[in-house]
Image 1: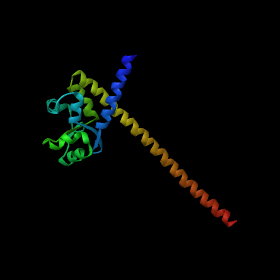
Image 2: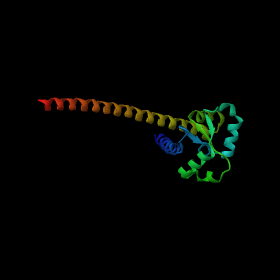
Image 3: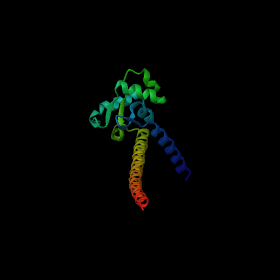
Image 4: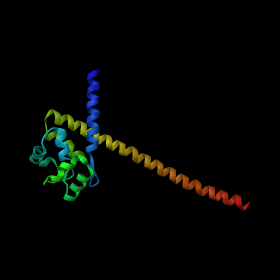
Length: 163
């Protein structure tokens, strides 16, 4: 039982850390190579070498390289990415599918564990967004009902005033 609590605590800490590192760039939820390398316990240079060696596993909808402007924006908005400010290389961004593909490329125990945690974090975020979308739909329905009710009340008021 104690082992399960310890594992859950590790998962909760990893989950929070991962969610903080998921960014929205070009309208997609992504993680940067520097963050993924850190989570997997490898240097970013080695991480990117592995990805390049397996480039056929990473089509354009799995990975893309940030522009200089995008890099400036993430550096300005994310304190933990300040070290990128002095890097001459443009970081790579991995979509949810790209992150899932990393598990086939990086085979250390830590990489496999982190891949599972990261995929779960993406799933949780998607589920949260779905809940917000459902809530937005319900609010929209309530607004429509209020507009219709308001029209009915105006008509009723007009009829009563005529009497």
